[in-house]
Image: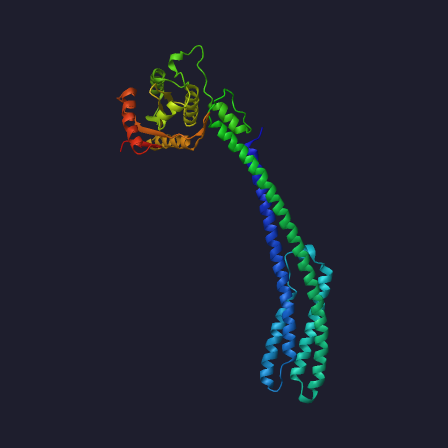
Length: 389
């Protein structure tokens, strides 16, 4: 039998794995971006070299400003092209990368030196220095191209790893969706079974431990031989009016500081249900309602089914807000539940009348007052709890 706790524990584990995978993918994308920045810096060096060697030295002052600016930018580009990336330790060869970086730095330094010599040379020696600069440029371009090829290789490897990660995450996510969609449907089916009427006399088979436990715990005990059947309603098996008075008197004598509140409920569609459902189906519906109300029952509380199809919930609570909240939760729980019958699944709603029981008034008087308040809830359209203002 499945455990809801284990299902959600496993789901949290899978979601954690997916989250870690997504984090790893983000790191890979950042690494690819860093490799792209290196590649951009290398391409920028190509552009700067062309600008430097094509500088006109006729205006030596302007040429000095231009070349020095390009050389500063070139030095920065060399530094960026040799910067570290997140995934270098995993996919890059430290030895090969060190050799290529040192070669690039050496070639760049030689080109920058010859560029300055060319700039500072006297006019009749400029052609010779220009040839030396071109020679240094060619060596520099070869070094740049080698580093570019290596960076493209690293980018391709990173993209391949990222693709693999995406495929794994997609497959794991798809399997998680299909598996837990099935598991959650199993939980939903159990909840639906628990909220449905037993019309064929067979108890539903639950697939989850927790809901099976709740259903068994909510199953109301039938009267024993030592308990008079006259204290129970013949259809619902709940305490009837006679049994209610007896239990209430016992509970009132045992109460401590709690106050007693009454919530009187009536099915809004009762007259229609009586005409369309069989006696056995009505009995099953009453029992299921009793089980739902019993979910909010506390030790000194009392649930009773009166002969005139009203349900009484006498609550011992510390405050009115707590008692009213429980009454409203019962109405919402009934509204959210589906009741299966021979005619199909049906939805019902409750109207409720709520009040604090005055200490000097009898239980019957309080129920009569609650019935008047309940009429106000029905006037509003039902599916709500009315109270005295």
